[in-house]
Image (cartoon, rainbow, N blue to C red; front, side, top):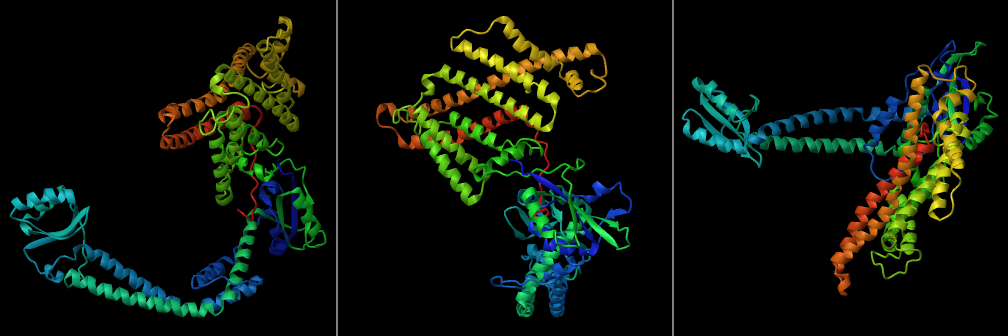
Length: 631
């Protein structure tokens, strides 16, 4: 069901907002509205804009926590000023250590860059400084893909003006340096480029052979890492000496910083009595929480509050409240859209109909029990809402497994309490269509209830899923039932009146709705002839939708037959008729059928829920309730 909401208007001195949030509002889930949107038309009202004084200190505190080790200690509550003093004191104590850490980190990064630059050419046994002394020979470091290098080798073999020295390689690239007389540089460079040779610039500051440079850099890196580790220990000793104070300060600052963000919802205004500025907050709360909050702040003379439950300018958010067993099914409701505040919550409806149809289409005691156990375990330990839905659906699968007499595909172990679908194909399909007709009628009744709650009387009376549609479709279903059971159907004139009059009302729903709402213009603008033409086309679409929506439920019976048929194929492949079945095939077949058909059935049932039923009574236009504590 949809939680009943109250809109609270809270006002007080501007400087008192942090105390109010910490002392009162932090205890409750509140959906704040932007006060400026509600008060924008008033004079002397402006957004509550201030610089967050706690943010920088909180970030320093988070940096200090990086030096801590071991288990978290119990924290104590402290005021923001005290917390800021503690964090700033400790941060100042390790300021010099952190400065030296940054210097060593920069040096470490520089050394790593050198190593990455020189590592690919570590196989070159030549001092790099001597390359700069070449007067008539040019050189270029780079890399080339292995497949292109094999092609390049043929060119190098035939060309006397270039030499390629391979320095290193892996499964993808070959690194090296090529030499070429200055006279032929442009020609050879173009050829290397045609083989996708990628130039790499090596710094001129390198003097020795690449391996010597790399080894020296590695030793320097070890020295840097040792110094960083020593500085880390030095800073950690300072921080750990005041671990409890820092953790308490950080927790306090985090709370103040989060509470500070509430200002983005607030507005400010100047008091008429020169008492200064005051803040204004608008927030939705569950009625029971609002009553408790009102009782708490009733004695606080710095807070002014009032209920604005009738404020039509602000739409209430939707917060669902359902029993634990229905909580997983809220996922399907959220996927379609949350109900509007005055709309019926369809969670119970979808929980009952979804699992029931799943069980009808997937009736098997053994496989249903597996779904039940697996779903419950996953929901309990992993909190997967879909697993909870599967677990509940597994209950109905077990129930219909007994009704069909099916156990892991074996049709002879259990007697059918009701019937075996494959022995009654036409009965199964006809019952599925009848079941669908009943669900559509229930959806129409729910639409009538929603229309009454929303006070939409045109939708209530003349919508294709309103009273007119309920009478028209319900009478057709009644006649079909009488015909199938062999009873006489009403006279033609009665059928014509019971079906025709509501259908005409549906065709004329727009002018009739305007008439009962007492609007000055009954017919919409434009040609009346075109209106009636469009009404006739729409009427044809309504009749067609009644038929197609009803027939669509034949898939419920079709999948019940499909499950029995697929398991029959598995048993045939396993050689069950010969008396010595292959159990490996039976196990694998059950896994395949349970996985594949379970997925398809789940999707098909959800399609029936959304397109054949939800579309008749449910809009899903609600906005979610978002507590600022979770924002």
